[in-house]
Length: 205
Image 1: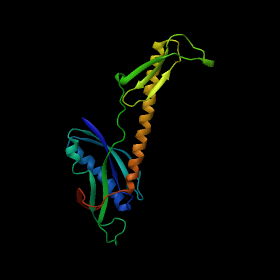
Image 2: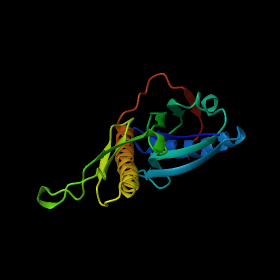
Image 3: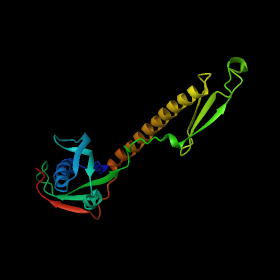
């Protein structure tokens, strides 16, 4: 089964657009279930009115998700009178749906690690020993590397370097994940309102 996340955003539009976001989250759950896809609301930002959302992130898991999402990814136009401003003439309210790139699983394979040995130096430039006990672990795909010379044993330093390298890569993965997520949340302010991929007519109340 494949899994991915989508973001639904009002583009910082008015409260009516935030209602659309909230309604789309529920609609996608129902439609996904019909297609044997599990859809869950992961996180959201409350909108200006009760029950509304500026933005929401949903996780989807199942088969043939590309076919399911084909009619959803892009700008959604919802045609309805305003539930908050009865005399308002505008009836077109927009929201946007995009696929999130963040939250990709952390991948670790020791086969991607290359080891180099060197003499471990002690205080004052004195050698800890005469053999090359220090171990440098290099993650070949990314070039990230760490040095371990905690022990007089090359084998122990090898294990220590593996642990440190894995943790360092995890930290970098978390930082990158947060950066991507922040970038996507900034898309609240960017919404293309031309050529909607889906037009929905219905009362927003």
